[in-house]
Amino acid sequence: MNRLLSIAAELSAPPSSPSCFRDLSLYASVFKRYEVVAVAPVAMLDPYHHWFRTYGLYDHIEDLIAEEDLPVSATVIAVVGGEGARLTAHNLGAVMALL
Image (cartoon, rainbow, N blue to C red):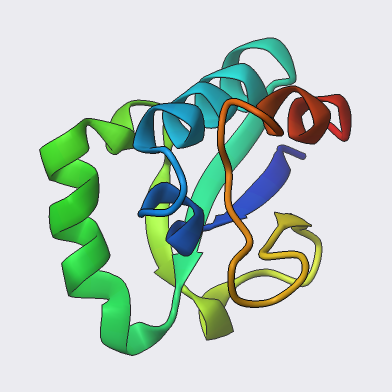
């Protein structure tokens, strides 16, 4: 059984760093052997799809899925602390350490 890692798609957009989002998905898929998916609200799937294609974020993401389609067994990296949470070079190492 593959381990599934879910990352909130909003962590790919400002004020977060798209390159840190890509680094996290690379690390999780290659070194930790997770199957990585990005999760977004249904209404935001199309805008995030365009965003991911524009910034090359699909390289290590298996799929972009709606929140309600997320399997219960997934390990979730979500927005902690509500609005204003971000993924940047300052906290990327700490997030990776959680895996």
